[in-house]
Length: 182
Image 1 (cartoon, rainbow, N blue to C red):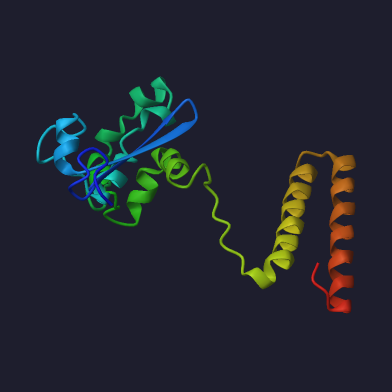
Image 2: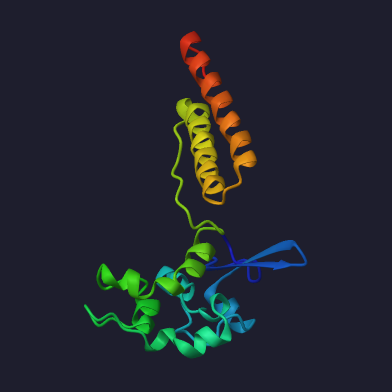
């Protein structure tokens, strides 16, 4: 792809901007990017590691000011491998298995940014099993909801959820007897 400004050199910098919901893209060579002010010096070349480690740097959005004052993540260190949160944010990898527990209160916001808001892994579903597995997940979700309602002693609501589970299980049983997918 050629540089959109000079039309001579190969584009090595690809910028995407979202302004008022509109996406604009520009593809520039190193020299034109420097001339237009997108790069300050020759050393302003970013690696994928720089991009990913930048995701770890914003802890302030995930904690309130009182939490941030109480536990500054940059002062945290793993007692097992002695890796600090600051080192973790630069490297993007844990030093040992205990680091996950030590830095856990600062990880969910990172996971949300990286995974598009999802913090629970649900995996992929093969195409031929999609409907069947989706049906099983729905039943499991209802069972979890049922248990929560029982714990909260909301027995009328629990009875409704129980009936939904029975209905779904009947549909699944009848479709297996017919040999159909749900």
